[in-house]
Image (cartoon, rainbow, N blue to C red; front, side, top):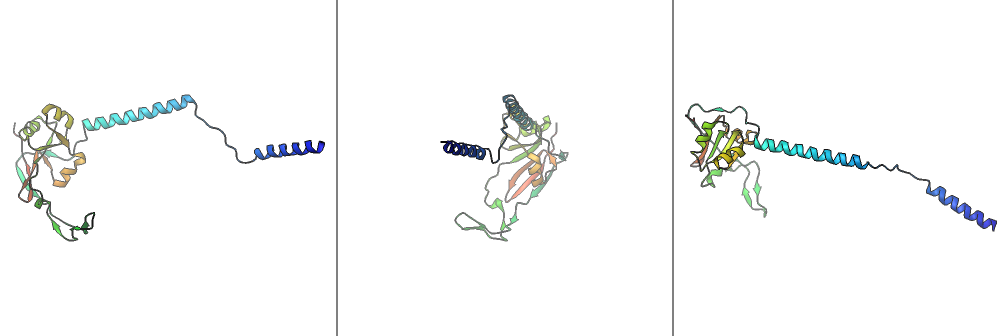
Length: 191
């Protein structure tokens, strides 16, 4: 009987000592107050980010180094380019071969006029209103305010990408299709 008790005690002691071996981890849990505080901080950060985006949409950063057009000037933008590597469609058909010269104007029959102007200049806005069929693109000012005032869809040249592409240095400027070329006209606004 004593041998049985001793064997049982040895087994229990062995099991207990085995159970206590191995790696243990401290239980870490944020307090409910800290978790709520972090949640509030995250929501405030999201709200702040949303406010910044809204501010940027309402008043984007103006395109730099664009001056007022003082006299009429026109020039052409050459859209022709040479294909750098073979272009194939999804089924493997060759769309354009390496070295091929392409003019996109060969495929574009009509092109909506684009006008670039300063949305903070009332004279420019009045001029834009004489161009109701054109696509309006601001280089300064709030496109949302102009849309609301004029009921005309208005865009903004983000980071001056289009001005750089077409070599626009002054506004107001009008871009239109002339044959197989793109005509760019700097048009002064007279009061």
